[in-house]
Amino acid sequence: MKNLIVACALLFAAVFQVQAQDKKPPASPKITAESPDKNITVVYGQPSKKGRVIFGADGSNSLEKYGKVWRTGANNATEVTFKNDVMFGGKMVKAGTYTLFTIPGEKEWSVILNSTLGQWGAYEYEKTKATDVASVKVPVSSTKTPIEKLTITPSNSSITIAWDNVTVSVPVMKHGS
Picture 1 (cartoon, helix red, strand yellow):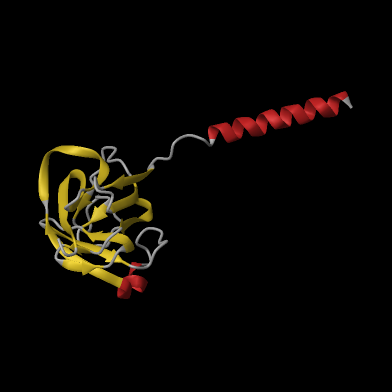
Picture 2 (cartoon, rainbow, N blue to C red):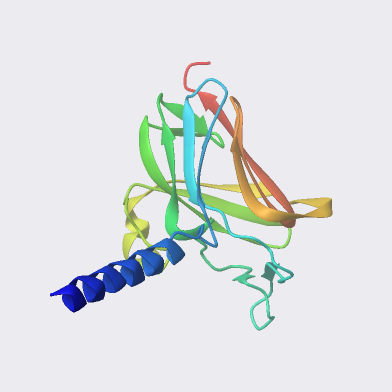
């Protein structure tokens, strides 16, 4: 009986140790960012550059290719919630939650809002693109210093996406403002 108790205690300790090791932070943590007026909330997985080339032409060793749909984050596709109707890059968008996709380019990006939620990555985008509610083109700005972690920043008047040496910004205004 004593041996059984010792064996159970050792088994419990081993399971507890394995579970404790599984608690390390994820490589791309889930980030929630809100605009100061709390009208816009963005939830995204935040990958790091880690010395990689992030954006580049097809055939390059870049992580994301120009002209290809990107989930704009890591893991689950990024979701944007508007508490009020907005003008998103000049296009009317109803209050609600949308999946955010982008198509990076060297000089401009397409930024897309899609009404199909719960997507993993952009793998199913071709099947869901009929549910796009807005697509806008925005110019690329270069940064002098590379940005290590993907950062999506909603403000009261825009959503800015910055990573590596690239920044793009979509104007967002409450409808009727």
